[in-house]
Length: 260
Image (cartoon, rainbow, N blue to C red; front, side):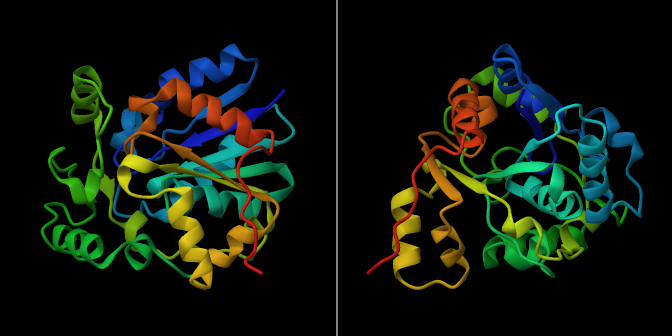
């Protein structure tokens, strides 16, 4: 039995994976959609001390309480930070890490460190204006710097996203990720939501240009997948995303070939 832990991007909770989780469970999988501290129906638990380590521990606890001996950890956008932190602490329980439309943070980097300059400046400005000093209110969906492409999400999905979005604990964005290197040795898959601007073809060009971080993608344990939708595939293409996650869990997908 394949087990999955699903961790979504900022402001959202386990509710966002409902349709994806249903399809995976229909195929016999054990599925744990994560609602991190401060999100969803746990929004009341956020406080000044809530930070990235809090969210890492949330995912560690899901791993420790799962029945499946090996798990596929899925990190979407911000969610890859706690996923990597948890995988680094429980590498023996991780079958594969799946990066869904997100970057590849490394040890010592925070969300603000790896975000593009315009996004980092945008968030830094919002932090300075925080009303309580420790959370950011979810911005309107028109804030494309925060939400990315919403392509493919229907009216009901957009209403749900706006209604259920929870404040983001500031410490989760500013605290550096701490890794020993164990997580980066695990098999991995990347899922690129092409309507949000990234694709396998673009990654191949970045690798060919010699980008040092991208060279990790040449590892034969790494597989890549394109998904023709916006940044929130769990809302815009849940069936297709579930199918991709099953393929990724099986080690299927496109592998990069090193340039001669």
